[in-house]
Length: 230
Ligand code: CA
Image (cartoon, rainbow, N blue to C red; front, side, top):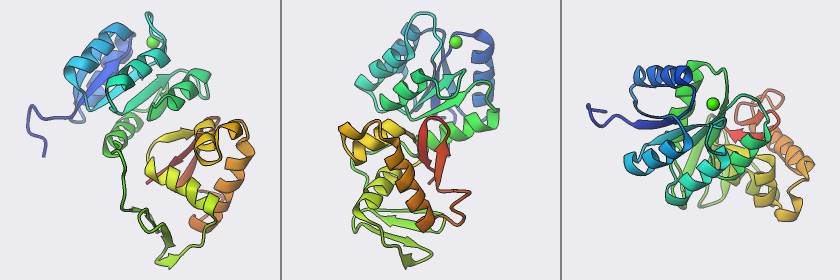
């Protein structure tokens, strides 16, 4: 499908030469073109000029705050952005996800994981108002008819359960933070009430998952939020 010259391109914004080189080798050997950038300013320039299919953004840059770089990219583009960080659950990672990053990876990351995340981010690149039927394992969600089925049988959901599921499904593959989920489903005044999302995710898992204690559809991102693995 991808002839030379039409390979999907990834902008890599990372100041450490060794990691930049590792990212480049990994991506190129998996069929991506790579635009490297060694700092935030160069990254923003290349985001504008190269129009990449995805961006990998290291949060520890010498010249800029990762959240600001992300916001700047978002002003002109809905390109998928994957954050690189050294610590799980770091406030910067959460801020970036809240500001529109699609996913995150913690250093050191496995190369296969990196490639899988980028492919998923590009595949799930968001359209403005995605409608239709989403299938994930035994579950189908008809977003037009608002009907959820598991193994062909209709699953009865409460209004709140459906609203939560719809949010997750429409953002399949993306990590959604607790705060984002609470604000979208329950409203801004519930942004800190993470017991709501926990309880309702538990209910959805009971109704939808093969093994609710070992979920495959609504996956927990420890210390961050949830991801619908569609
Ligand atoms: Ca760095």
